[in-house]
Structures are given as C-alpha cells and as structure tokens.
Image (cartoon, rainbow, N blue to C red; front, side, top):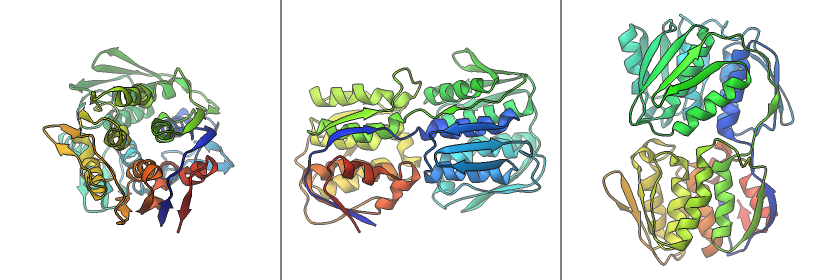
Length: 400
C-alpha cells in the first residue's frame, strides 16, 4: 500500500493511541494473576494481537468486546507442546520465551525471518547453562526446559525485554528470586513499566539496588483498568507541530513511567539548536528524531547501535530515505550525525522498510514536502489508525 501526501498543515485535537508497551505487560500480568481480569483501552495492533495469540496458545481464555479484553487464566500454562505465533513482535518473542521455559515440555515460537534475526543470545546462553533445549532456525525457535526460582544474571546492554521476560517467568514460578543486571543497563524505564504493571496484580517485584531486582513470593489478585496513552506514538503526532501544525494531543498521563516521554524535551532541543542527544534509553524515537533533525538544525545522536536490530536497521533505513530527498546521515561509533539539509521530493517514491516507525517518520517529512511512500501498511504493527487519524486532522493523504 502507498500513501501520497500533499504539503499540508494539521490542526485539531486527538487522543494518543493506547500504549502498546503497557498493553503487553497488563495482558501478561492478567494471565499471571490467576484471576479473571478485564482491561479497557486496548488497541489491536499486530504486536498486541501476537501477544493475545500467545496467551491463548498457552491456555488462557481471552475474549474481546470493542476495546475491552477479558482474560480468564484458569487454564493458563496448561497447554501441551504449544506453538506460539509471535508474528513480527520482538516484545512478544522475548516476553514469552522464559514462560515457555517454565513448562518442562517442548514449546515452539514462530515468527517472521526478520524477527529471528534479532538478538536472542541472552536466552540461548541461559538455556546452554541450564542444559535446556534451544533450537533456532530462520523462522522459529523450539525450547524445552523447566526454569526454577533463583538468582539470575542478565546483560543490560542488549534489550531490557530479556529482563522483563525473565521477571514474568519468575513471578509465575512463585518463589523468591533475584535478577542481577550486568551494566550498562539500557532502557531501564521499560523494566520500571513492567514492575509497575505487575504490582497492580499484587506481585511483589522491586529494585533493591541500581542493578538488582527482587521477586518475592506473593498472592496475586485480579485487576481491571484502562491502558494509558502511548508516548512513543504520540511523538509522531506531536512531530507535526514541530514543522508548523497545531495539534493538541490528549490521553497522555503526565506522571507516566514511559521513557519515551523525553521526546518533548528532545523536540524542543532540536528546534532551538544543534544538540547531542542520547537515545540509548529511547531507541523507538530514533526515526522521528532523525527526521526532525534533518528538517531543523541537525543533531548528533549517541547510543544508536541498537537501532540495527529493530524491525529494520533503522539508521540505514533512514539514511536511505533521506538520501532520496537529497539528505542523509553520517555514521560513527555508536553515533549518528544528521546534518542540516535542504530536503526536496525528487519524484522517487520512498520505502517503508516494513517498519512502522520509518513509515510514520517519513510521512511527517512528506507532509512538508509532498510525495509518496510505499509499504505504509507497516503501521498496523503499532498504530493501525495512524493515517485515519492524521486525515481527520487535515492531512492531505491518499492511500492506494
């Protein structure tokens, strides 16, 4: 699918979509609680549908009514040799591998080839050390093991999703456990989200030191609540304001623990100068920050190596698309510099690289320049209503 935009200025009020990060965590927390729970404000992005499918495959009974989901976990973790379909969701894959290792029976997790190009070494090493089966190919991984409560050491410099996945498993096991994070600890804010969500269901999980997490035996309970708005996707809506639009964004919790809240401060710095910004704790903001830097004053970004292992190699993908507009990026050692550049649509359609955040970032740029981008269906991964929402705000966009 392609989107063709004319230069336009957006105006109006819109609510940020529900947080994908929080929805993953609340859905899994509901299953771990052992009690029937209802969650509202759920957006059915491809990633969330993947986690729902995996919970069902493990035995949970899940029903949906509009944006409300009811989770009945009475049969959760009682499936026999289940197959978990993770689609293209890295969060889903990394969250469910440790749970699969609690079953003591064969579990297969499947997904796209690109998904299985993303790092899984932390879990592979854990399985090797414990004598568990870990058989990986181009589109799946098969596991067999029986994880136990105890002390685990996990690298903190690859993805916090490994830490979150292990927390889920240790909470399920029900004993006293400890996770020691090997520094540097990147994206810690996402682990804070995990602990916050699990505590709503009665789990006793907390940091006891800068690099130590304690999980205590606890009686969990039902929780019903609403998923808060997503700062990650709100950043793409607010980016239109940085190039002349007037969009008011609601449904954002000012006290949220979401690390991507930092986008507002980073946008301010991009508009007022040529800053150096560290995105090691907010890698999902990379594409939109690169895009705004290109049309503003330029910037240098640190902590960019992790962008190589996302839905696309996001640095390379943004360089390719900005190059089509007469710009580009400069790559260094764990850094990317975006010079100030005069961008112009030259008639060649941009590509979305099967990456929702590349599509949304370049759509913001094309709202200023005009032009066409292909592969825009990728937004279904996190924000399926993106184009409908910006059209309501006045974006002149044609989908074909």
